[in-house]
Amino acid sequence: MRHGDRSPRALSPVQRWTSKRRAALVPSILKGETSVQEAARKHGFAVAEIEDWEERFLLAATRCNESVEKGSKSVSSAARLIAQQP
Image (cartoon, rainbow, N blue to C red; front, side, top):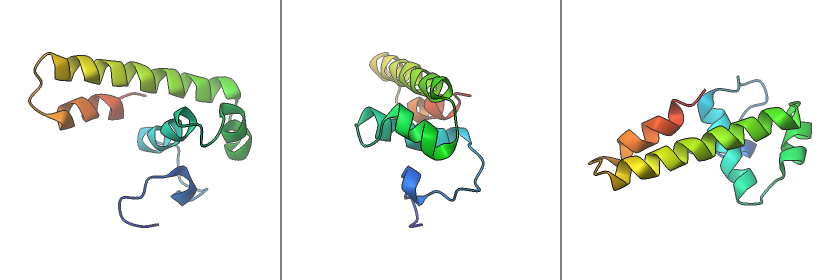
């Protein structure tokens, strides 16, 4: 794995599904690179579980956007909101 490469394909199958790892999978679903069903089958999760990750990711992204719009001086503070999602 290259340094900084967080694509789902670059992750070891034995790694625990941390929030960072989930956050790497969800954008690939949103971009249409894979489907929720395909990701669930490939990684052994229920479709509903991955859909929940997707919903949490989008909620966090909305909160980040609101934070930036309200004058947050740091995009990193907004990014921390996404990483804090369970």
